Image (cartoon, rainbow, N blue to C red):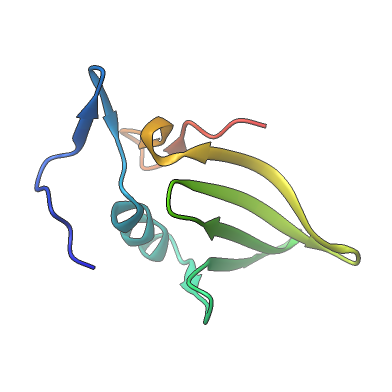
Length: 91
């Protein structure tokens, strides 16, 4: 899927991120796409996953009991900060 907009989309005056832009940002940060289209990254805490749906993303961590949600957010609420961090996810 190609990016359709050169500039960030704007909804109600706020910049929003697209799924493609989130994938591009995450892969630049060391996340890897898995066979299901989600992003995974190993850390000292274990395996982290950005589970991507059509309208939202969830940040999850793998536990002995399965995946546990840490934060989530709709793409319309997410943005990349000036220092390159993902903002807009809530608990």
